[in-house]
Length: 94
Image: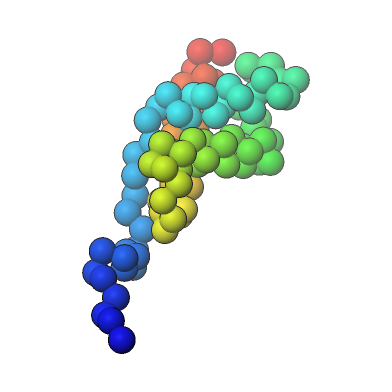
């Protein structure tokens, strides 16, 4: 029996990544294009719509790193932070 390689071990705690703002902006734009939403409605964000935006941003983050497994939680956390920052910026422009 051979020993498992250390390189194959998954980290015990997810490492928080910072999503590039462009990814979050793209995710927000993609989801808003699918919705009939006005910019002044961003202050009263529907939780399901925000969830869609975060999921889209998390997908873009995972795509950027080649969908390597084991980083799903870190991707989601980075996507949430990036989408929230993007929504705050968009709400400030409205």
